[in-house]
Length: 331
Image 1 (cartoon, one colour):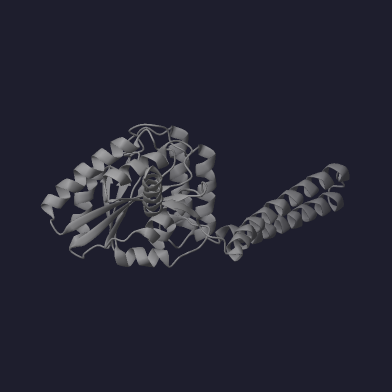
Image 2 (image 1 turned 135 degrees about the horizontal axis):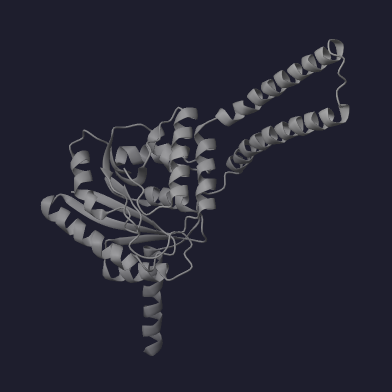
C-alpha cells in the first residue's frame, strides 16, 4: 500500500472548508477505485485562524479517521504552514494544496499518473492565465518572475504554483532546507528533481476572501529575491561606481567651463545636488545591506519555524479524558 498525504495550510477558511472536504473526498474515492494500492490522509494546518477553522478540523477528525491536523499557537504564515505539513506528513507521496479550490483536486489523478511510474518526482500546475486578478497585480507578478530569473541562478517558472504532488525523496530533500526565512517556490526549484508542469486556466476562489493583500505579496516577493539572489548586494557597488563616474564627469565639465568659457558655476546649487545624490545612493545601499543583515540575524537566532499547540491526537486524548472523568463523576 502507498499512503498519499494531502497537506492543506489554512487561515480563516471556515467558508470554503466544507466545499473542499466534499470535493477532495470525492476525488480520492475515485482514485482509490482506480488505484487500489493507494491510501489517503488529509493533513490540515491551522495557521492561527481567528474563525471556526479549528472547530471544523475537530469535527472532521471525529467523523473521519483519515483527517489529521496541526494547529499553531499563532499565525506564522503560509510558508511555515507548508513546512509543518511536509514535516508531519507520513505518506509515501505528499500533496500540497490550498483549501480555496483554486488548486482543483480534479488534477490529482493526472498528477499521480506522472509520478507513479518514476519518470517524474513531482507534478505541479502552472497557470497560463491570471483570470480574476487585477491588471496591476498580474503586471507586478510577471515582473517579479522576470526579475527573479535574471538575477537568480534558481529558475522559477512563471505561473508555477505550490500545488504539487511529490515523492517522499523530494519531500525529504526539501525538509533538509530548514531555513527560517523560507520561499518555497525557490526551494522547490533549488532541490531539483524531475518536474512535470500541467498547464491550466486560473480558477477563482470557491468562497471567502484571500488573506493575501498586495502589500503582503510585495513583501513575499522581496523574501524570494533575498533568499535566492545576492544580486541586490552588487547594486551597491554598481551605484558607487556610477556615482563616482558622474562626479568625475561633473568635475571635468566644471573645470572646462571655468577655464575655457569663463563661466562660473553656481556653487550652492551644485553642492546641494551632489549632496542629495550621494546621500540618496548611500541610504539606498545601506538599506539593501540592512535587509540581508536582518535575514542573517533572524537565522542565527535559530527560532522554530512554527510552534504547535494542538493536533488531532491531543484533541482526541483530551476529549477521551474528559468523557472518562464525566463518567466517573456520574457514578
